[in-house]
Image (tube, rainbow, N blue to C red; front, side):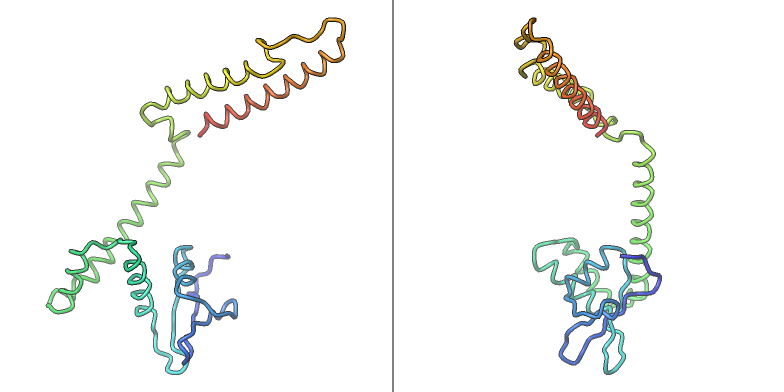
Length: 187
């Protein structure tokens, strides 16, 4: 999906069905949650009145996820939110939440940049060298048990063409295994 600076316009019909104006089809709350997860901004408006219903539907998406056991918001945070609607603190809560989420986005972005600057993030993990040594030992053990490998039966000396074909096949298999091992080590 191409990134757009304009919010995705969703119209709510009188039947309460939601219509995606970009793709000309009906969508569900899960579809809208998917658009948001992909980074799209959405705007949901009532077709008849023109009222902006975005906030109402976003809260409904959150409520549905919470009711399915996908608990993102701790009870004490929910309690504080309800409390903020009934006290004078309501003026600072929205700004505080907006600033907190902005800081979280920046930290996630910075973390992703740091992860990309490390040549192999797994190599920094404790025990990575031991894991890599185990992988190499496993690959060596597997290769040695294959027919035609160094410990396996040798080709007949009188049949040089058969030995040559098997040797080429073995070399190709060893090369493929070495490539796989390099890829695994890169992970």
